[in-house]
Length: 189
Length: 154
Image (cartoon, rainbow over all chains, first blue to last red; front, top):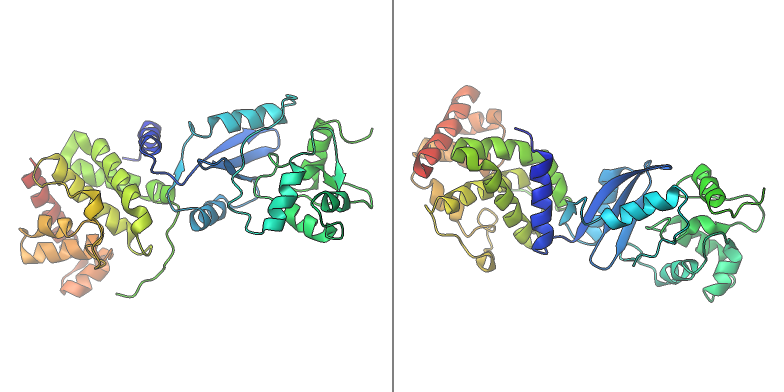
């Protein structure tokens, strides 16, 4: 007697209704592969690409935010739908509240908050983003902030490029970065 | 007992790993109400999860919660309010001894076997060597113990 989907859905809904979750998560299929999306009451706390081990992602959430990690399609529906629409080319912005609990360094949070203001179709260099975050010489640290961004796509670290040219690194791999920049019309022909 | 780990896994990992066997167990105890019992057991688990101090023997912990939930639903035992779940000892911390009170009436041999299974989380081979019997006999004692619980529930 393995648990039916209905059983699991009912359990998740009851847990959410009673406020017994620290984190809710679900997977979503998109044009750039399967993503894991996790949310708290404060907002989206994690978006993970397919190549990240989901158990490791969930364990980090349990360790950092709380052990009551519950898989819920309903609680994550809106953000999952928005991500799919965005990755299929819908021009609407991904404006969701973000929970930066996984980001411990306040400098990195500041960087990501400035990065959120870089809109679709625009790009910024690591150095320029460092300047906007108030630390013009901290381009390398900005690189680290982007590399450890817990909520890629929502906080658009794919819009940060090296001043030396090329698309540079990306947590989801350079191919995904190119895909996203092309999707947003930010790469010159 | 030495803790083997201190870390609490993401709760849904427990659901995915153990819901099937808990449903099979609950079906033995209460038949058609198994899904309701296991759902309530997981909710109780979630309610007390933040208060757990380590992640040892969580499978056994879930079996005990399922057992007490089945008894609470049958009206055979008064439910213990969650607010009282602050006991200090490891074995009873989740339910203030509710599980112990349920298995009290079993024969010594069966109760010991069930305790090794649902408190110490041992495999049948290890239960057998602790009790000085064969693994088959250990399995039989656990099964008989569960059968007695079922009889009291119906």
